[in-house]
Image (cartoon, rainbow, N blue to C red; front, side, top):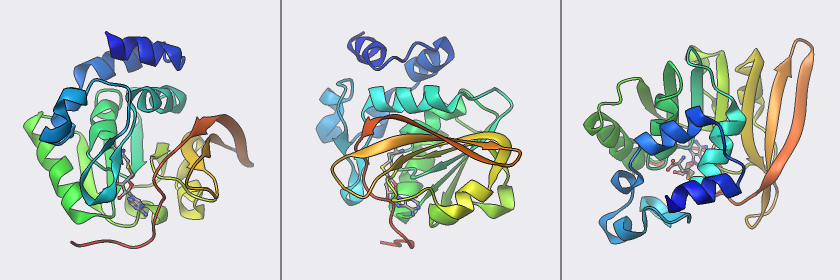
Length: 205
Ligand code: SAH
């Protein structure tokens, strides 16, 4: 209920998005220490110094992505797998890529326990995308970058949408919507956000 108010305050009104979010229990994605706060509209710390995003921001980004049921989606930055779980209720298949192997493994276990079988978890540097599965109808980047990575732009289908936090500072970035047209890319600024940075390379720890 409290979450619904927070979502509405961020302009999240799409019933498909609200229903998908209702179906995903955020408590399953946070560590036992923070379970009591799983339904507050705040980001929470997760393993490897990363964070699970604020639910209202997840809602806003999911709505901005404008998914259709037949879509193939790439998420960069699996983290806990919470965002991927929401997407799995909205689209045909979700590819989600994470540079920290233990996070990717935990996310896969959570998705399997929830019976979400249309998510493929990949360990890798998401700034290169997943060329063998491209093109994607939608791409959602959940870590901040100075510029939308070229390989991700290239792997977006014509007519497709990418949502990505862009900025040079760790403190505040701008959420950008990129639409690929027949002859280029259209850019739109959506909101101020704060994400952990997109980092190159893979961590096997
Ligand atoms: N979407 C997540 C939260 C994202 S936190 C959720 O629903 O819980 C951002 C994540 O991006 C972190 O887990 C971080 O390790 C990952 N990340 C950062 N740079 C990356 C890169 N180049 N490739 C893949 N993942 C990356």
